[in-house]
Length: 618
Image 1 (cartoon, rainbow, N blue to C red):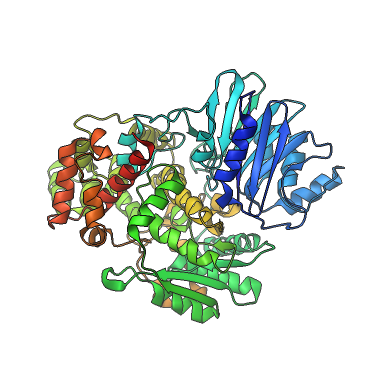
Image 2 (tube, rainbow, N blue to C red):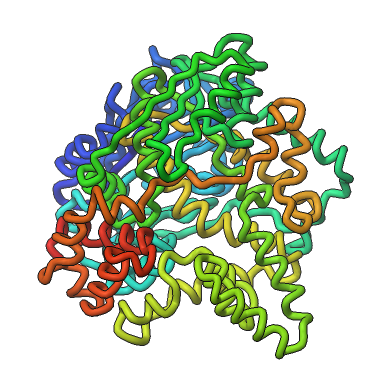
């Protein structure tokens, strides 16, 4: 992993800005820094040295130093690409992956260049003879890349928003549409951010900017969706599907073991991370360093006993730790690393786990992505059940809907818009604040542009099977803007490279083309994956019900964080009350504190928003 940044287009103070960007992104790459300076353009990189420790420091260029490249992430097929380039007559001076990008840029157009790369990456290439900047982001958005464009071909980019804002030409202004979107999703959907004019490069896209022109976005990849755009489902039965999934997962793990520094693994004791550890142990033939954290188990958040069972089975060098986080201090740190509010409280344990892991290794593998590919969330089964709901007589529908609403929680939220069908019911399950609360906080009608965009992603997959459409929707929203954003920021906060075998390109394209019945049947989730790894794991792990990687928010806001949230969100001069209706904010806090409801997640969302707004002075 690394941090990349740069400025093009004759911007004043470009050189000084790049120096500041490198300083701001030091945590992403503390091992080396370098820059490729050309008239009217500078691209730069902070390096976290993982592969080619001797010759791989930036800047990296082609033979005659007319094309420079910077890279955040890893290109797993770089050795094959390197061999192809050598056969074509290119001269390569390093043994790493960044150099292949500079050489490929000599002979391929930008989408074709990105398409040749297999990995997790965000890159920038500046081609001096063509006076052309190319930015690219990996297929699923594992690595971030933000930019701002101004008149006359000006552009500033960086791995984190703080790097973009470092340039004095970039306005530090709130996008007023961000707050309603945040209340719905817990993030502002790509390509938008909380900052007006600062954009996130969409996954599977390249941005091309030539001298004096405007930035052009070009898509080079999209999730293969059977029944849509000519993609066909794979005709595989259960046993054969399990075999090909297992083989693809084994290859994905092996690709992610390429490293010149120590590699370990997160281990939660769930199916996904446990399978990764099992395959690592088989592939390396040596004890794998595994890492688990726990809180005190008053709230049932401690998974250490399950992780320990897997660690014992595979003889790992297991590291486990009970953490006692300073929640107040962590809120400030998390907002700082995200550069904007982030409503998913699982960022807390992720941050702490990365901190523990980085003490021993520089690279860690995780189980992220399995639920997104193989339908491991209960909401997928609930969404499919909605089809049967629509077959009931209208009176029966309403009776059942009211009964489910009375149950409360996510099931109740899901049922409330059930008569509107998908994707509204699915969105209600995902939302950080339900529709009545959002309306109250926003003082009535709200700008629903983000919800309209969400529906637009759903509508774009018309013709595909319902589960395939849900998986596509999830990949293009929740995965990129929640799970992957969290994984990147929390690992990079500690200079830890996090690799996700389940998000391997080959495995992704295979999994998305499997028939829906291989993934979900009734309440049975991730069927084909469970079968694929069944011989690797103890039955107690295979049969475990899925748990989120969470923290005891409801208790924290009544105990550890009670005074903090009262003095911030609950204060008369709270910044959130300048953007939201004060009465509903105070009422939500009061209901939680006196036990009339559990609103920990909504309060966390408001708290991170408050900390952000205070920091920006908005």
